[in-house]
Length: 95
Image (cartoon, rainbow, N blue to C red; front, side, top):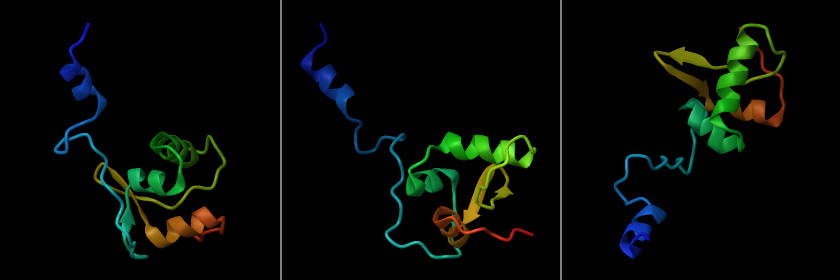
């Protein structure tokens, strides 16, 4: 049987834990770039939803509307204004 101290440590991560999620800012500027994790948190969808569907939409294997993203290094970023328009269901003109 595990000790009470060991069980207490498993219940919650310490304050300085590396795996805690970054909190979203209170206000988001329209030109701010959002990461996949931030888009997932704001929309209520999972990160894998964005990563999988963006990949399938780019290769033409799935016809879906996704927010316009740009790839910088290993990061997929989307302008906040474009992301919120996509959430509202407005069609975006992507050049």
